[in-house]
Image (cartoon, rainbow, N blue to C red; front, side, top):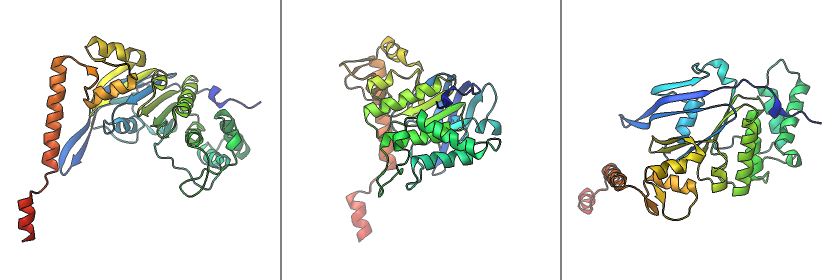
Length: 312
């Protein structure tokens, strides 16, 4: 019988972040990507970050994972700042799979084990651990199949994503970050990936993931939710309480719809099929108008007369 890696003891890490801001310089002028985001994640929980494209999900995930530095705000891990010792306790699954096309699943995870596990373990123990991961993630059927890529036939999308997760959980991290692990997968495969994240969290690990547009089944699987819109925090709390909260401030879907779609529409400022209080609706329209004005100033096209003058 194989040893379950999920059952291995791990140091529980409570993650807290308050008033986190991030800025970038665009043509010399600072532009705020995140404006004062606060929240927390505890061991045993799966926290989902949701929002439209460009809302700052990946930026926030990178900052929490220690891959980017906040302009302002406080991020603490068990009330301690980010340090070198913590780096070894973090697993980070990027959106783009960084895997070698011509290696098999077994070779990929074996090399990861040999390179990333401590020197106190023997070579045989490391190889054994790679096999434990393969059985843990249900990859035994495709262990001798090449990863594949654009020109080489290989494993399926769901299997590929599980190999990426396996690459990170092989070090038994306390914190696991994932950037859109379900993008490009069908709803059933996506559900299996999220169920896997729950199994990982149940062993005392803290799991934080960004999610693009989940199905309603998938949406209800998350314990906590952060909803971002244009770099601002719109909601942080239990996923089950998100809809009652928006209903309490007068935002309701006019037709039966996936709660994730409803929340993304709100975050996008799209108020079709949604009843919102009149003062909020006016504010949304004003902001959309200001955004259009700003974009039109940035993307000023030369008039026909200007073009004519340049030609002559």
